[in-house]
Amino acid sequence: MSKICEITGKKASVGNNVSHSKRRTKRKFNVNLHRKKFYWVEQDMWIELLVSAHALRTINKIGLNAALKRAEAEGNLDFKNITILSL
Image 1 (cartoon, rainbow, N blue to C red):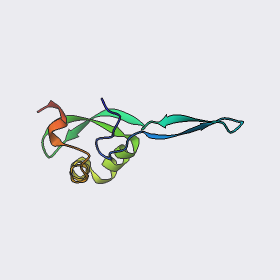
Image 2: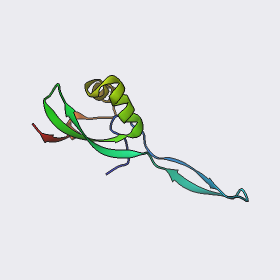
Image 3: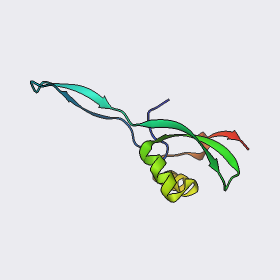
Image 4: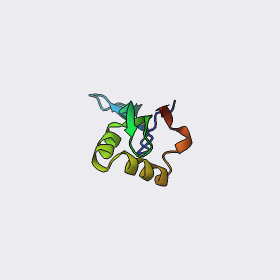
């Protein structure tokens, strides 16, 4: 399982740990991901998505159907890979 948000396309970035003496060591900044279940009203089914906290706010703001369409247009989501829980 890759650590990439299915809605926004966010993924881990690289940076530095900086100690008190200003020594720098590489580190990863992971995305705040959650596996969430959503009811997709237009298709009358439950789906499961791996989404970031930012994507949850986007879904609340514009709706699930619009967020899925936007994610597909940006190339972040392929409808073949959506986990369908029940029809």
